[in-house]
Image 1 (cartoon, helix red, strand yellow):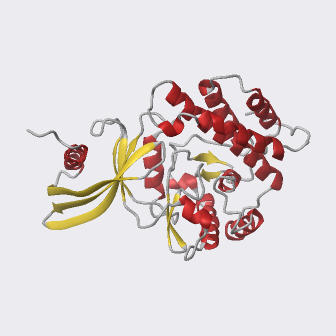
Image 2: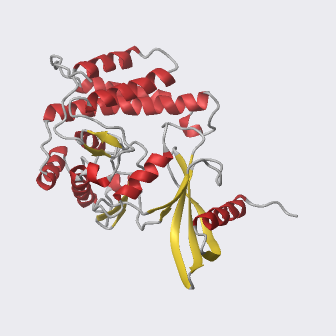
Length: 344
């Protein structure tokens, strides 16, 4: 008997998994399985699904996302599935979350299936803004999407699986979270990073509101078609917190739409649509925190490779990238007095 190919094996797993999720279905058929380019936190395949349900023939295009063995983020796939499911129909553009294999019983590692949405996520095309690519309009649409997300009544939406946050403590929670990852994954002392955390702890702002924060809101994490965003992707860093955090992250140098839409214009459009005022000092705080976050993401990836938990060569030298991020942190660092801190 000839060996089974990886795609054939995956098709079998998919049929068995979907049979467990669609007990009334018959003639489940999986076609056109193909891998998709994805980030370092998961593996992704697209496929076409057909089945008969109550004498009706149904079909849809789907995407299977499987958690990577190890990478640059410590992610909870169940939380990501639940937030996308909660946001479906809210006005925030997301793909429909369909089924989840939380413990990896069917696909070896935690995985979930979503509806496939039309569009491209090509970061380089957006940054180049070539012929036929209206990157400015996409950036304006990003501001509108951020406004919709941050204005949602998250309590009515039922996202109690996200840790609670208070306006006095939202910044502190993020600083503590990223510092804990730094202490866990660093492979050398990094005195500049230690000093950065001291500064961040001494200058934590009070949020004006608590919102659902995407956490990785930027060019490259959205599906766009023409001048419109069809879906936000990659919700692995979602949390409750200060919405200004998303705006700061969107304008990091590596993926910033600054060439097409200035940060001031983005903030103006966002405020007009959301009614949420963006304090300049709070925005600077989260821009500074963003450089530290990305540094720690890089350290986590490098540690995963050094420990032998992944063979992803992209992560092998990620620790070397943090010098540029720390230099940006130092360049932006103001000479301000520490703020008074709330008890969190």
